Image 1 (tube, rainbow, N blue to C red):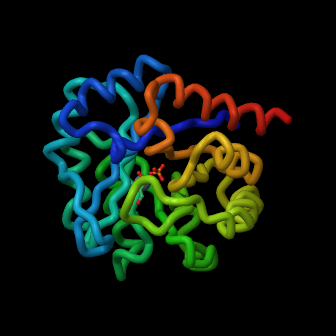
Image 2: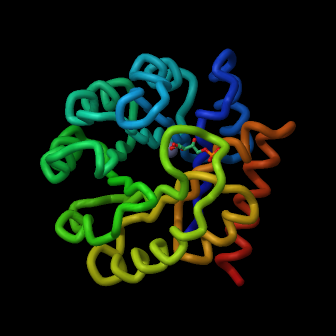
Amino acid sequence: MAITIAPSILSADFSRLGEDVRMIQNAGAEMLHIDVMDGHFVPNITIGPVVVESLRKVSSLKFDVHLMIENPEKYAEAFVKAGADHITISLESTRHVHRVIQQIKSLGVTVGVALNPATPLETLTYILQELDMVLLMTVNPGFGGQKFIQAVLPKIIALSEILKEVNPLCLIEVDGGINMDTARLASRAGAEILVAGAAVFNTPDPGQSFKDILQAAEEEQDS
Ligand code: DX5
Ligand code: ZN
């Protein structure tokens, strides 16, 4: 299984978002991670559909939209209309997760469910077959630049084993604190999409940082 690094624009320069996205696309990125926060589900506010719509005009990257918002069912359609290719909702953000999954699928995009670090895998038992992706948070959601929580590693390994049986096409994404070192750990554990914000954009050469993290993750997979 190929590894994908999805740079998170949360750590990009919001005054020149288009240029930062183009830079990362030129470095070889195929997926862009877009963090949507509402100040309720998480203690931070970021971007809405209008920004996604603007980026869609300047980028052909696959838009991986990560909703960290309450009532995701109210906003999913707006993000799809704005150009999202994939929508991930947070399990903890809605009472009716199965219904929201069906709703997002009916909008014609792929769907993922994110679990906070403390949320057990068992919460996914009855929805796993419906999913294109599971996102295991390796930090508590809300901010870029936090430290990778090592305790999630056994969760990645366990999910990888379960998916082999239940839904082999479902991808495992990890998000939070990914750098060259933790990319190796996550890749070894079975993650296939690694989100990286600060370790890409808060560096002098984001394109090169993207390539370095990808290489580290790929080496680990081959070893
Ligand atoms: C955190 C967000 C992440 C964040 C990752 O709540 O979901 O996607 O941008 O940033 P880093 O890679 O800096 O931990
Ligand atoms: Zn994210």
